Amino acid sequence: MTAPDDTCWTVLRAASTGDPDARSTFARHYEPTIRLFLATRWRSRALAAEVADATQEVFVECLKPGGVLERADANRGDFRALLGAVTRNIARRFEARAVERGRVRPEDSAWLQHVADDDAGQATVFDRSWARALVEEATARYRDLAAKDGEAGRRRVELLERRFGSDEAIREIAAAWDMPAQDVHNAYKKARKEFYRCLREVVSFHRPGVMDVDGECRALLGMLG
Image 1 (cartoon, rainbow, N blue to C red):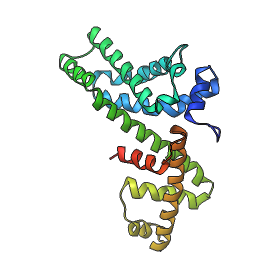
Image 2 (cartoon, helix red, strand yellow; image 1 turned 90 degrees about the vertical axis):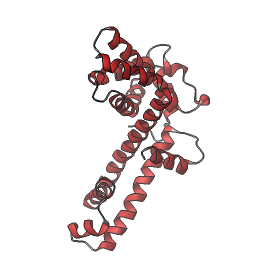
Image 3 (cartoon, rainbow, N blue to C red; image 1 turned 60 degrees about the vertical axis):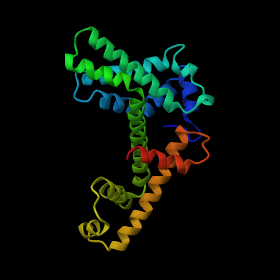
Image 4 (tube, helix red, strand yellow; image 1 turned 30 degrees about the vertical axis):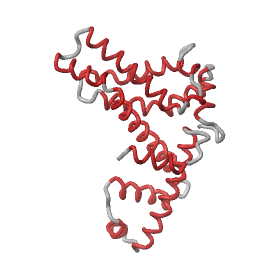
């Protein structure tokens, strides 16, 4: 578990010195973003099977002596941009290797070149992958929080999933649960407040020192469309 006073930068600094717990925390926080970006970039292509290996190569690039984490500097901006640049570089390395070895179909070669040339567009794809991973991190944190409240907490988790996942109306959920609609409204209000608190905690970890955490949360959710 991440310590309450940890931020991404305390974890990154410790990981860069070889601390095993920090390295495990680093992987836990950032592997979902890297995997999602690579899977999106290579969706339905020959390289789709390379996602796991490419993800590991990103971690090698970050954690090796003299690697990315040793050079990372909080004064140069947030870690998202740096990790995105490293991940895109590794993706291009795998793509070039696949072309050199003749593992890519001719029609895919042109597609890969287009992707490699569209760095701004791929940076946007990475930002969306980052946003989705952080929201999922907040969701996992919320599930742990809600579990402490037993059945009522489990219901609130399900309520958020049904509202946002299936776009079910409160009245429909109330009817399915045989509960007064006002009770479900109240539970939904509490669930949203609890989840947003978890999201703020996640954002504060990844963007320590940011003045407008609520604004960061809105921007994060906005990346998801």
